[in-house]
Length: 239
Image (cartoon, rainbow, N blue to C red; front, side):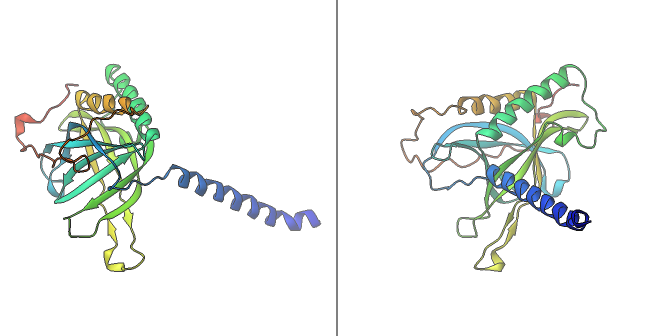
């Protein structure tokens, strides 16, 4: 009888311990990057984003790729709806991207992509990322960890390898008016575009101590260059 009376307490403790372990796991996956840390421009990639407010066709643009050796993080710098974003990938995230793209290519070649699959954006897993976003240099620089889903999405009847950036919540402990929430958005890659990013990720799985440096200013990457949205200029994979 005494054991039965203590059973609810035991169950409560077990659940509490389990919840604590789950929380710890999430914290371990989180990481931060200082934009003022040493950094090198390591390339540029092309990708597609939805147009303003998600209306209309995709818009192709160029994202600058940077490497932060101190944090061992690769950054995709791009612009969307007037904001500049720095999306960071740690080593675990880069490995998951490479593996996810391999699985996507296998599904593509085997004709296993499903147009009506509701969870296709999450099919190849979810990773943690770190995001910094800002409207202008004189405005609040928001930053927070968030999740990224790896999968695929059909757009205009063509499949794209997709990187779904979930919302990030920035909370300023000193000024509530500075709180920010980044929009959820999807990056669309053709197989060739995704392969280019995968190759860069592979190069920085084992960091090279002899990194290329911008002689003019190693800490100032070049500005993003937007490519005009032209209907026949949007790349796509036949399927």
